[in-house]
Length: 187
Image (cartoon, rainbow, N blue to C red; front, side, top):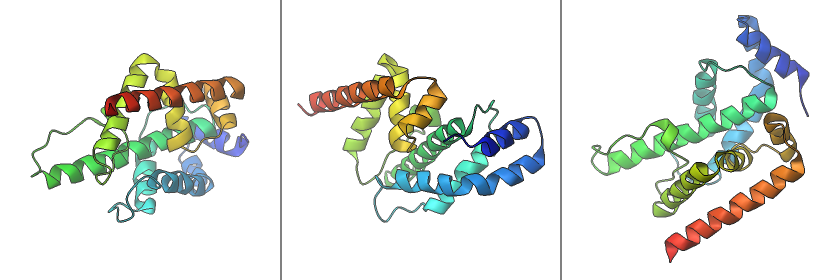
């Protein structure tokens, strides 16, 4: 599960070794592509941003982030978050253009995956996840890691330092809370 080569390269990269980034890139590229493909499952088929472009943009952002990498799971969790934010930013820009381009821009930290085709439903999901994050940030983060990042319970266990059974319990609670919150908004 934990790839010592990736973890070692991440640590070497943080320490300033430029060759470690070159060695790391081919090791993580396929997994980044799978995360991007998973993120696109909820997007419309004619999305103007392509999977490979999403991977490249997210990787470019990851290269410039100042983070003390814990391990490969931490890297992929952050990559999933970056991809989600890129998709949201793209959707917001597209939506702003459709409304004349004068819509207020949202900071990347305040948004979640938004598909222009999904409209209100996705915005409702965004608001519900934000409400969950205000109530219980770790549970919202777990949903993000699991569903947007495709991390397994074992990988999340490594990143968060928690047992898989407690993660399962918390994710089930978070999903139920989210459903309840969305159903209450529909009423």
